[in-house]
Image 1 (cartoon, rainbow, N blue to C red):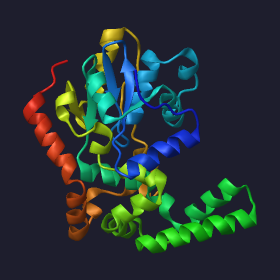
Image 2 (cartoon, helix red, strand yellow):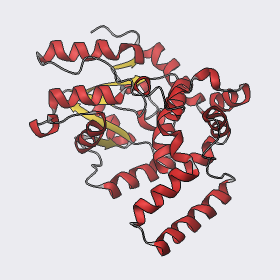
Image 3 (tube, rainbow, N blue to C red):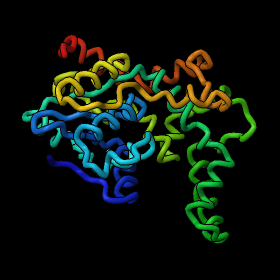
Length: 280
């Protein structure tokens, strides 16, 4: 398959920088010689990557497989397709993807990654990157301080209510995407990954169909695959960030999110009209 590959962290960062600037890049995992799974962050990709690795990965991919390792291993096999490459691949492979309600997807990103935007988490990340070098820390801190000032944001208060922080970030989402690479990876619109044309896809499923899809893969392969979706937040009830819900969003935050993700809703409406229901 054509497309960019991630050999190291620098490759991954360059891909994210391009996507943040508006370049559409579609992460594709090949299924045999005639299909591909297009994964999107926060759209059940942990469960499906684990299932894909169990069926199509090498023996080394499958050893000690857990959710964190699944992302790392699947990234090695991912082809990042630009729009022309996606169109070319779609001529020879059946493409499938999972679409998620944009508001639910944003809340899910907040449950797992909003804590990374706090002052303590950002400072800790700096220290980790500079390996304890004070001069390099000061340089990184100054550069990010100026970046935040340009976009009119500041790091989130460590002791604040996570629900308040979620609403705050919802109102400043484009600025946070411009300032934090990992956050942008999990909150960019889905069409940044899907490519914008639902006509290229054979199937676009909802989150509620993930288990059915995994069971379908298992029945076709005869292999025992990961059979259930990963629910990391449910396993961490003491973490206040992990308990965030859609109901915690205030009306003005919801309105801002609906505006920001309007293209995702338009995409799925067009997809429903063009593709119809999936029949495994």
